[in-house]
Image (cartoon, rainbow, N blue to C red):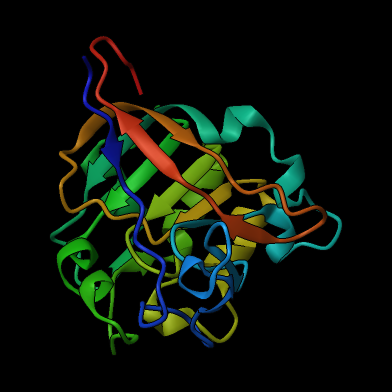
Length: 215
């Protein structure tokens, strides 16, 4: 049986999060005499392993409930970018073998560093504008990274990478745990929660290392 690789990060009250962290309350509990446990969570749309839909930065663009299935399910190429210090460039993507891929995941040093910390790091690895434009020019459908934002640290005021990707209709996956994923081709199944009309949603994602998959 083929091993399924889970690249999701756990959701809990002390997790790494941009802004307000998740909270929950118990609505019913068996210890109080109820038949079952029932919890209610207060989380942001950008919690945990999640997708940014194009409407995150482009008015009128696709929302999470209207993303085409072809964007989020299909062959994906995991790129080894662990040597990059802070900003993934177009040259980095070419050197890592991204050409020809329609869906890409960036394995960086984040997976064993910034992603493992409960608070935002002072620095992390993100995709730079030149890398974003390189993907857009080649008709890429999906791009994911192992941190809570695709944006490189130097650009989190005007968010040019997000603007470029969203304008091109590229679905963004953030907070993917790629620490145990070897570079190469996989079959990806990413299923965003279909929040109607919204710009983002948690998106449980798994990879299947099936033989013969050409990402």
